[in-house]
Length: 337
Picture 1 (cartoon, rainbow, N blue to C red):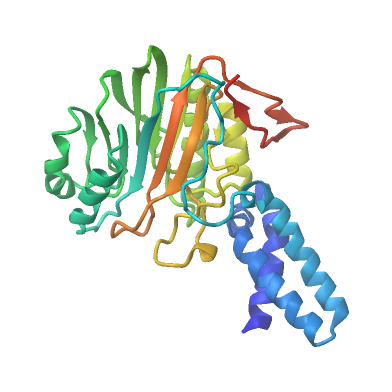
Picture 2 (cartoon, helix red, strand yellow; picture 1 turned 60 degrees about the horizontal axis):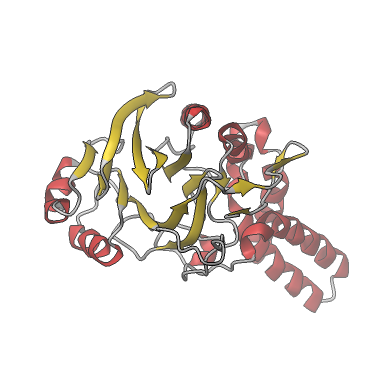
């Protein structure tokens, strides 16, 4: 079994490097952590049996995957809370806000676990993906704490709901991409500063047409984000990993950054597997005006996804230092100046 896993990991490592050339190749780019783990085990076993040539080859391929993971690995695999990534200036205590993003799973009946998470986390903003009308009725006890909401609950897995404790200056549902999937666009003002929150849930890339639909919606959302004045957050189950060329293109087009950087891999799917075997496909992408103080993965809620919790503040003085270099997205930190 180790031999077959090693061959698969080696093929996936090479194939994923050409992800921009086709659907299946792009699909292979999502499993860098799994490839690295398998190849490191194989390299150790081969070295133990004195097969030095194969050990060196598999070790080299493992390191190639680690190079993709390195910006995230600096924070580890764990979903534990991290220290503030973007520290405020001395003497300044910024107002922080909490965003909860959770794909609740279309057939989820564990409404009690979702209510408990809402009670424990007490987010200012909550984006719910795949909610059904029946689930939202079960979550009615929590709705009183969120007087501002936009409900697009549906029975087809394409529903979205935004709950907010904070007044919304405007909120709309816009169908974007070829398949006209809904996205929620909410505008609000935090401590006098404007914020646009874009919530979406593109198709999973399990076929060529679904991958094309996902790519179109992601790029449409990226262009929309780039047009906004003030701070922007794009959040949701984006069905794409950070190592995909589609993800990198989304960051380039939107001029946003991945809020995970420096906080670890934070894999969210599938929830029933241990952390090293999951992949991070639930995201919060943030603009330069958003300072990320804490980002973590929550506990299970009866879904195939784990929720993401983002604690952030806004500051117009935030600046991103050299966010783009040589056509690639940099992992340079945006700091409060």
